[in-house]
Amino acid sequence: MCLALMEAIILAGGLGTRLRSICPDLPKPLAPVRDKPFLSHLMQYWKGQGVNHFILSVGYLHEKVIETYGTSFEDVSIDYAIESTPLGTGGALLHSLSKLQNPEKPFLVLNGDTYFPIPLSEFHLIGDCTLALHQTEKNTRYDGVHITPSGKIITLGDPSSTLINGGCYLFHPRAFKNITQKPFSLEQELLPHFIAKHMCFGHLFDSPFIDIGIPEDYNLFNLTI
Image (cartoon, rainbow, N blue to C red):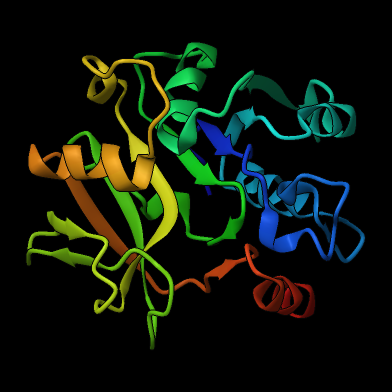
């Protein structure tokens, strides 16, 4: 199989307050899963899919992430975009763009606390923003999505929809051309802005989806990985 090479920004700067009881002295992406940090499982999967450069967007306890990985992971180079003050997921993403080695090419964005192992070879950019979507039986805490038959996303954030945002995105850099650097949310501000401009599409995958943000799902991931 010929893999397309791509850069990936991993949003790994969250406070992880709900996992403090499990890993009080670690940032959430370093929460141990079996014999290694969750972030290692994430990067290992995406390295296998063709990612050849990781940009880790870090904030809370970022020193521990840098100490753990240094400048590479299994021969894949790592750069860091460090938040000196909290920027939110959208601000952190925008802050990370300067670290792209190919700033004119589409790139992958991954939540640093979700594991959604989709095949990158089947994840194609449509428009300037494409979300990987997951169909769940019951939506209890995720951003529900509504799409048209052609895949265009028309709403995001509806808790009644069982079609959810899987935390994997493809973006074209031109989407950010007129976005000002400031603290803001990717999910609650930036994506709705793109949706209003008819820039966002969704691609449904049947891969398993796990969010380690709460202890119950973190424990489930430890049992299933």
